Amino acid sequence: MPLAMNRDVFITCAVTGSGGTQDRSPHVPRSPEQIATSAIEAAKAGAAVVHCHVRDPETGKPSRDPALYREVTERIRDSGTDVVLNLTAGMGGDLMFDGTENMGRMAAHSDMAGAEERVAHVVECRPEICTLDCGTMNFNEADYVMVNTPGMLRDMAKRMVASGVRIEIEAFDTGHLWLAKELAKEGIIPSPVLVQLCMGVPWGAPDDLNTFMAMVNNVPAEWHWSAFAIGRNEMPYVAASVLAGGNVRVGLEDNLWLDKGVLATNAQLVERAVTIISNLGARVITPAEVRAKLKLEKRAPLPR
Image (cartoon, rainbow, N blue to C red; front, top):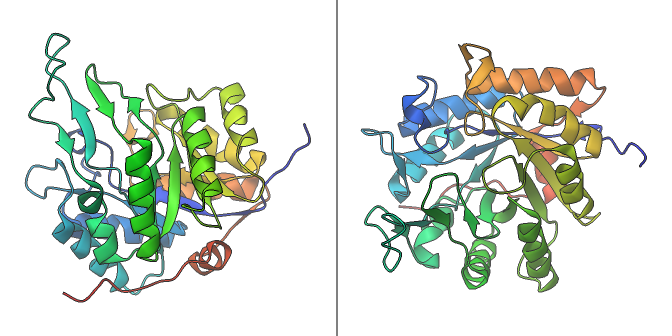
């Protein structure tokens, strides 16, 4: 297979940590002010796109509160630092069970919401991009299922498009990519199509290179794609993604460590990615170039 390296690369930084990692590193931001500050620092380090979740400022637990998303959005937009804003829409599909003998009802700590509620913050905040997790998947926890039915995804995607936001498909396995291609074929996800290949997240696609290239080879040629792996393979995947023709993602959502025993900041992870990309002979592109490539529009949130 010939080398098809990408020589004009954009970096996405996923700034907010994953799940309960707020208690594993002091660098995982909690409040809207901390999240916005970390996103701005990542942008100054070279990230063209920042991918943000929000957390309860008191507990640090993940949240879907639109007011928190609005504050993050306004702080980033008002900062004077140009960056493409990518908000998650992955919350609200968390199905939990209280053990294997209680499968007839979901646990009280489940977080299941309708399509309108799951995208309400996207409609209000009007980021350039929002994510769409294109499938249902078992996660590492014993009785936790990420639920995104085809009907739910069609409904959410239509609402995202109607609000003028570009969809970033998140594909955690080959079947998710298959479904995404069907949604694009149906015209529900319009061109230009953007997909994030999520590697090594238990129990989706493992991060071995054979599986990675199977995912890459199933991305339509006209689509734009990026990829990441979690944990210690975060930085190797920066190189792998560029060499395979894609863009890259780093950040505390995917990995907490800079070196063995050294906790990272988002900006430090971006700086290291910039070094890898530059040393490969590629160029890190700007937010303005990403907007032109993906046909994005930078807008303020809806009036209060």
